[in-house]
Length: 306
Image 1 (cartoon, helix red, strand yellow):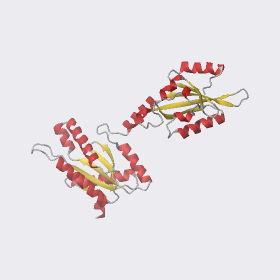
Image 2 (tube, one colour):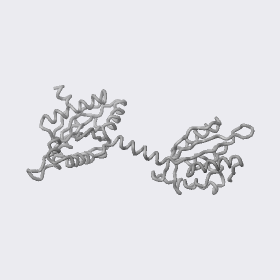
Image 3 (cartoon, rainbow, N blue to C red):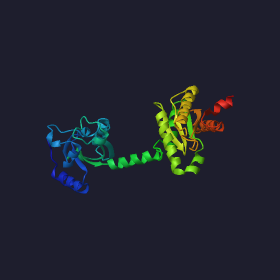
Image 4 (cartoon, rainbow, N blue to C red):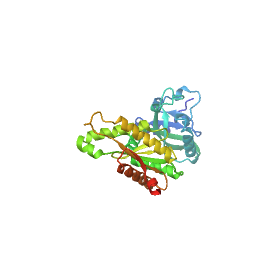
């Protein structure tokens, strides 16, 4: 059953539609059921006129957000006050009841203005739904850029530190490895920045391939990479890091005596105390590994204990 607007509400709705081309205007009853909607609600795969019983406003939302939307609308109807916009995803698909594809979902912002009858009691609400998918997409893109290294596409230092901080907050104990390509400055001076970038990019792809499930990989800066390991023993971490370096050495072996020799080193540390302390310990291990000639794994804590 479709219920129309009163003349006064119809004029108000007509004005809203003129000012908000492309937005969806909805009339709710006092229980939150949709009794009228502008024709463009069909863009969401919902035909209000084709149902015997009016759909509820929560039927528009993705199932994981329906409860939040329902609580928001119920509170506004009960209080009889206009609310700030609530953003939620909407399945914009003809197969909206079963489709779970991310590209079939668009984000909308719902603004709600309660209506009162002649007696002063609640008579439902007028709602305005505005698509904010483009804003959401831009926000997501900006966030991705803020936490991603532009050369390798891996997480950057800020993202890695944030993740490490979360692990420390839950007790820490994991091992952290910092890998660095040896003699990158000499390679850059001899072959140029483009070649150096290609080597760094290639090493990043190689580390991704060597990473085990649960490992978190990031670029700290330049040619240095950090990995938060799932291993909690220094022995297991050293074995994995040593295997990484040995495999890389075989893959990067020069084809001729005149080709550049590329190797990497690694420093290990246990994730404890603070982010700065953990990274400093791993950096000290890296310094020791390079001081020993490179292409090896070292941990500063072992040397201090000795």
